[in-house]
Figure 1 (cartoon, helix red, strand yellow):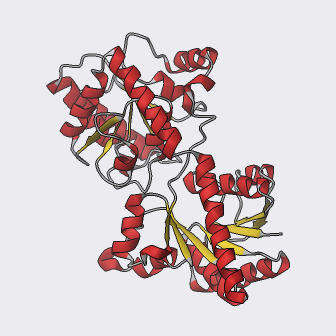
Figure 2 (cartoon, helix red, strand yellow; figure 1 turned 90 degrees about the vertical axis):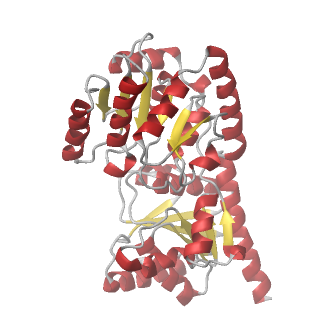
Length: 386
């Protein structure tokens, strides 16, 4: 039986973890044996429900001795379970996985999930480099494929572009009942008369919450917007200081009454549907930007910065708007344009956006292409052996 071992630091929350679960489920459905190694976390249950086996290893450790110990542990897992290939999704586990793959002579696959910080004077670039060293390297966007080619000199023939996919059964307007929408609107005290915009994303500075607050001030000052509700939906993860920064910015720019931080929203599809406009305001380029795809799948206009992968998901002026990164005036202008759509324009935008997301950013397609990469490597290995 073909067996794939995916490795990552932990199974807590996030896009990397979600992709790991999705691929594990696809492997099990396709008749593979699916293994996942990490230090564990709440999403282990999802791995097991996907029909995969979880193996607990401290793969997030970054020290050279820990990486060496983990390489030996992974080599043992590979031999004990007759693993066919290993797929690394993060840097520290990738160093161990690369060594284990070399020791056991199996293919080594990586997914390049982010434009990793090179550090001062490029000091971390060598550490990051392992993610570009797979026998095949999966790039989650054209932006990341470009980073691989230009910054890491990865040969194009080793890069496989596979956009991240979203669950179109979950992010579908028809899947959100009127009861769910009413319950969420009551919980968040939304009204039909007050326009609502939303920035989904964990409460960390580079997600651009303070930039959006400054843009709200420009909306009030430059565009004469008098009433608005801005939801900032995401977990603080203990960063209470940053939440205070957002609230302070609201007071500074005269929009404190507009800004509402929501850390306990458990129905994001309904929150998208309750919003008139969805914002991504990241100050650093997003490797993909799942929020942008999810919001468009829900038929909502999206405003995002003109860097990273946003331009691959948004068709400017057709399914959303791009703004100059870091510029609150440009962001305010884009939000105002989105809020000014007529009813007919909103319907046309929604139809186009939903159709495009279903065509290009479907989770099922992402999984199918990932399994095709595995088969490509195993086929190449079989041909080499013969």
